[in-house]
Amino acid sequence: MNPESWLLLCRTVRFGDTDAAGVMHFPQLLHWCHEAYEESLERFGIPAAEVFPRPGSKPAIALPIVHCSADFYKPLACGDPLAIALEPRRLDPSCFEITYRFSSDGTAVAQGFTRHLAISTGERERRELPGAINRWLEASALKGGVQPL
Amino acid sequence: MNPESWLLLCRTVRFGDTDAAGVMHFPQLLHWCHEAYEESLERFGIPAAEVFPRPGSKPAIALPIVHCSADFYKPLACGDPLAIALEPRRLDPSCFEITYRFSSDGTAVAQGFTRHLAISTGERERRELPGAINRWLEASALKGGVQPL
Amino acid sequence: MNPESWLLLCRTVRFGDTDAAGVMHFPQLLHWCHEAYEESLERFGIPAAEVFPRPGSKPAIALPIVHCSADFYKPLACGDPLAIALEPRRLDPSCFEITYRFSSDGTAVAQGFTRHLAISTGERERRELPGAINRWLEASALKGGVQPL
Amino acid sequence: MNPESWLLLCRTVRFGDTDAAGVMHFPQLLHWCHEAYEESLERFGIPAAEVFPRPGSKPAIALPIVHCSADFYKPLACGDPLAIALEPRRLDPSCFEITYRFSSDGTAVAQGFTRHLAISTGERERRELPGAINRWLEASALKGGVQPL
Image 1 (cartoon, rainbow over the protein chains, first blue to last red):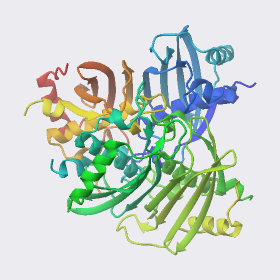
Image 2 (spheres, one colour):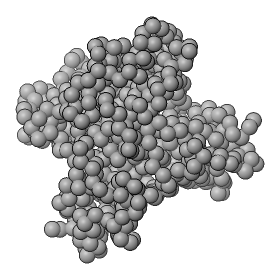
Image 3 (cartoon, rainbow over the protein chains, first blue to last red):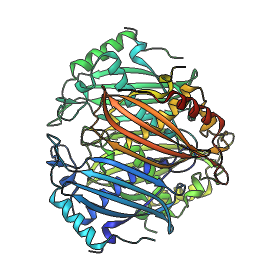
């Protein structure tokens, strides 16, 4: 599989993403980051139900975000096309992080970052990352990320 | 207890509620409606955990919204103060609806509406409304709502 | 152009669309409706900047939503695929509405509705619909909508 | 004025803030941060229209966020009460940042951070912070923040 198929994603800035300054409201970038992470897993072949809870189906391991950050380089307006390059990285057996580089028409516009910790959903104690996430992290590391610009 | 304490609520339009047209983005009104419903129950004395699920504590009856609507009379800008008058009404033993009248500085600006159905959280079958919700509906009906304008 | 290319759209329910009941939080459907309307215009060939404001570029006519509603038939969980069939309809020279039929794996799951009024952005007085919107409405009416199920 | 009146704020976690894991969806914390910043200015006596754009009234200086981050220590469920302690700090004549310490029932649960840059709304060039923001920063610095725990 071409890594671009799971590590380089696209979306468009929508009207509801903006605020009265006319540009993307800043926390929206982190919503886009999480949606890109979900879409990346889906494209890699991991069903959402293996990672995220549904009514009547709760994975034994949850992956809550313990830290996030974002940097904003350019204002983003309604209709702007976005390319999102993901760089996932395992930190240790129970933790990984993802850097998300956003560009629009070839210009870097923003960067997001999330750190995820694997815990048991019952006791909320540290656990090893689920096998599916490890496969996605290893395949992503082999490719060394993608160069969107 | 004065009914205004649970049927007449206040909030302010915030920057993140607006879009690039400079005014409140329309689905935001329905977020405000649900938050007003939660705050009304809280002020009436019903703990959130009796009605809404938390990790490790799931009420036997869920109250999903099966229909909602909203009418928008005036644009709302960042900083505008809002009064929200709730009119809850039981339709039948398993169903209630709420009308939310929004005004700003004495002028009607919008109206929201939600219809809630009581179902068992397991089989998702119709059930009677929980006792706490019935008490809130009855106390609200006795007062005949409030006149905010 | 095949009408399906602008009147039948797809998306996936994401984790951030859900609430602690495990399913899509109800106002999210109206966010999806507006994003589907924007994507439909884009696919039909209307640039976002002709209809929606950007910094330094404000269309003379705004199209605020004056009424919206939604009906929810089935709970929607993270990862569920959605097909969205749009049925736009002109009501009079300054007003149009859109019905959005949501289905998942061939089953009707929800329906949304928005009514839009054309006004001048300065005086906020009723105006005729912009030419681009009229072309989109006429082409959509000719096709008689699409049958997604 | 007691600094707690503008630097120590309260809110409650609402159902729409949560996701299917049963707890607050992480970007929501940054929405709360911005709303706390707006409420702090309001309580200090600065009208929203002096800082944030409204239809027909655009401040000459905008204060976009160029960086933000968040740390999550404990899961937050629907109904949890939150205290938010703000620590605003001027970095240089055109830049300030705010640290937001969130606690619930006396326990630290999360921390947010935003950095704001003053720019002209037309050319988007660096400018000095508006006078009202400087007064708020100076009054906040004198008080040395508040100790919520």
